[in-house]
Image 1 (cartoon, rainbow, N blue to C red):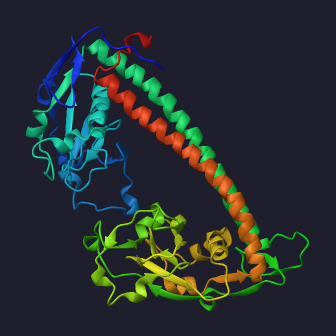
Image 2: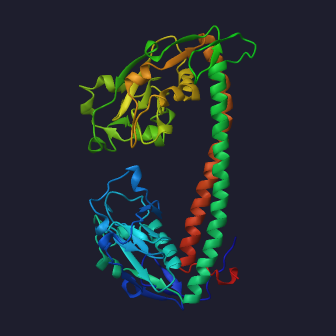
Image 3: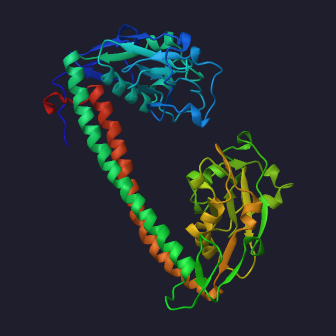
Amino acid sequence: MNFKQYPSYKDSGVEWLGEVPEHWSVKKFGYIFRENKIKNSGLIETNVLSLSYGRIKEKNIEDNKGLLPESFETYQIIQPNDIIFRFTDLQNDKRSLRSAISKFHGIITSAYIGVRTTANAEFYNYLFRAYDQQKVFYSMGDGMRQSLKIDELNRMPIVFPSDVEQQQIVSFLDSETSRIDNLIAKQEKLIEKLEEHRKSIISHAVTKGLDPDVPMKDSGIEWLGEVPEHWKLLQTRHIFNFGKGLTITKEDLSDEGIPCINYGEIHSKYGFEFNPLDNPLKCVSHDFIESNKNCLLNEGDFIFADTSEDLEGSGNFSYLNQKSTVFAGYHTIIARPKSGLNHRYLAYMFDSNAYRGQVRTEMKGVKVYSVSQGVLKSRLAWLPPIEEQDQIVKLLDEKTSKIDTLIAKQRELIAKLKNYRTSIISHAVTGKIDVRDLVA
């Protein structure tokens, strides 16, 4: 869609705003907003809220997730259309969304700044989201601050269109972002179906084999069911040697040194397999080699995350598919295959519902699920003859490659839609495009 610009512009005098429409005002934040300082004295409000991923959400305090205060009397009361800012840890965390508008009556921690206005709060919610995306809050002050206070926020310049125009922009953005969000949801649903199809193909091939007429036998494991009669059934301990990763902290990681894969990368980035040449990793000092050679990975080694925040992630792993010097990092378990096995077949086996299901049945936890070496060692593995392992891998590589290509295309489209969403919000609320004629 092509958008027209306003007839005339003027310099806002603010670097991140640039030129704004001639008839718009630029005012200080404190001229339009006032801080909310209503404490929850006497516990008159019990609906606990939190700011997460740019949204205010109702928080279930019964699930014991996160830290809870001794008393909610210290919390501040907020109302619908209040805007909340979280300016903690600005120096280290430059990815979080820092602002959100509340749709609820409730209470939220006083560590956050709550403000309210008689202007159009929805318009300013969009504006502050644009500021968030442009990292405006990080550049305020000297750029090295851990937090911002209300006095500093009150001096921040913001645009001030007329009330009518604020609502026109909100109406346009509500409609346009809803349309974009629906498109993103459709792509995410398609990815979900493709991933389910991928898992189904893998699970069938590595548990039933490629010959539909082969005699079968009962494995004795509910998650596995029947397997070809000529396949070996044995505990994982008999085909792997196990070890653990480095005992380090985040402070030991840097951009230079020996690459190190930690449990976080296994969960979020490099599941199934990784190549340090293509997949950038944080590093540890070369000094670790002398006393930690047993934590170095060999080509074909597997590395499991030993903790997961959800049951679904229990059993997540990756394997090194390239000869390279890489350390297994913190919260990891090393599984080194013994000889005479197709390592890629083992990767597909570990990725199957039949193996993951065995791991999950052993998980006990509330906030964190721990995967021990003992759990992995005692899980049942199943091995076709090596020639059959090779055939299964060849088939699965071909089929999963096609599915992975489709998934990558959908993710690329989602990324473009999200970028467009960010751009259209920023352009509309800062007056770079004129949307007044696009709303009824």
